[in-house]
Amino acid sequence: MHKDILLGKETVYKASYDASLIFPISRVDNRKKLSMPEKKVNNDLPFFGYDVWTGYEVSWLNEKGKPEVAIVEFIVPCESENIVESKSFKLYLNSFNQTKLKGLDEAQARMQEDLSKGFGGDIQVRFYDVMAYPLNQKGVGENIDGLDIEVTEYTPNAALIKTLPERISEALNSHLLKSNCPVTNQPDWATLVVEYSGSKIDREALLKYVISFRGHDDFHEHCVEQIFCDLLAAGEFDSLTVSARYTRRGGLDINPTRSLAAIKNTDESLIGRLARQ
Image (cartoon, rainbow, N blue to C red; front, side, top):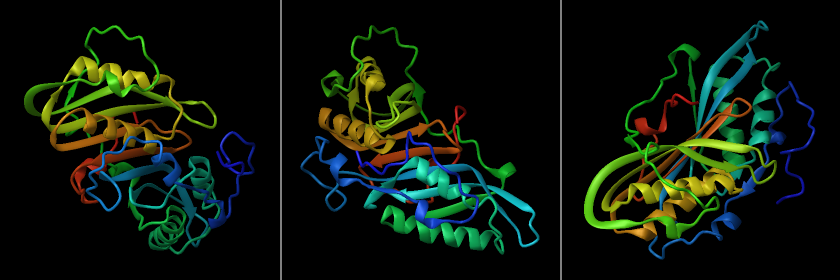
């Protein structure tokens, strides 16, 4: 882990705009750890996808010094060179708090330019009025958490996944995904959604696999990529999409989605929070 990373360190919070606070982390090294399938559908990657960050504590001053607030979505393509360390992202957003801007357009333009440089990709920034931000309860499928299973493994084990000869199309979800920050060891909680068409995934086996991340240390994006690759290797799928909606920390949540098919960044599945968020 990079020695200059900000997580877990005492930090001075700047209230004036400072783009230098953004701290990128390359995706490459963590992806080397994945058991990626040989078939690539997106250049050198076996998946398409986005990471959607939601900022719930975004504020700046108008030209008269009056505060403005918004909820903001930052849509990051999975092909971007980097992720951004979450505490540095928070510090960057906080640096707008006492900064006077001409309006929402200036705030959006600055964030889009700065974060595109930090992530190393074309980042989309969407502002929402606080009262108009959507609560998304569609498309999450059937919950499997009520299954009566015995659990003995709390580190990821792809061998737990089982598929059946039957072919099916369905969406399943679990609120029991938990992993840990690899720097601070703080718990990260998420709702996992698996949408697929192809080999039927054994639900009890899937739930055991999801729970096996409970002791795992990794960033949100890498956990979802590992889950996607492990599921893809376990069966034959015409379509497969894995999404995780993580609960917020420090006013930010991170929501990665990986899929066999290209995803338009206007898809409804990318926007709107779930109840736990």
